[in-house]
Amino acid sequence: MRQAGAYSGLLCGGVSGRTGPHSLPLARIKKIMKKSGEDVKMISGEAPIIFSKACELFIEELTRRSWIMAIQGKRRTLHKDDLTSAVIATDIFDFLITLVSNSDSHALGPSTTTVMEVETIDYS
Amino acid sequence: MDQEEQDRALPIANVGRIMKQILPPSAKISKEGKQLMQECVTEFISFVTGEASDKCHKENRKTVNGDDICWALSSLGFDNYSEAIARYLHKYRIAEREEKMNHNKKYEGSATKTLNQTQLIHAPPPSLSRVTDMVENPPTTNQSG
Image (cartoon, each protein chain N blue to C red):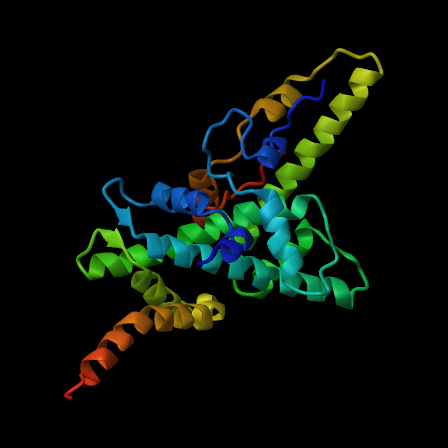
């Protein structure tokens, strides 16, 4: 019977069912990698495993930086604006500027509509 | 985020769990915050993969491997991740080799298991806090294995 290695448990998201920090689905990571470009044809078995660790570090860093923004705003709830502020304040997160800006403009949609409704009151 | 977008991103539950683990217990995270983080991580994967893939293409290689990911992380400014990931990759490869050796030995009729192999096979994967420690406080001496 094949014995589980120290890291092969990552393949099923945790052998014992413990929700450790390695619990990111490798198949999904691989899917995202493949969609990133036409040049990406073959991916080694270790790449999604390495990425799952890299993603954890990324999430950790962005969360920490966003939390600082929330604290500065005297809040204990992390909002998407905190993530946006953290992205803008961090050089290596420049690749996310377009994404967070688009996300902000989507959020502006409903309130913009509300303003327009106020401005187009029917006086007839 | 519609269902199709959800299927393309990492699961929000997993993302939210990782976020919660490094925040104080009393901290809360809005649903929109988790959703934005989902999108950011997806973009991170695409961004780094693109860089790694370009490298492979220039070197006439077809397969993106762990070393390419490490290189891409460093190239894009994620030096601290790159070092921790390089160590993780090294341990992963050793564990895989040990597992293979163990598998081969079994079929050669040997029931001998070294203590090191048993320890390595049953050692839990490095926790996030340990990796973070490794990122922030890299060991000054080379650890074997």
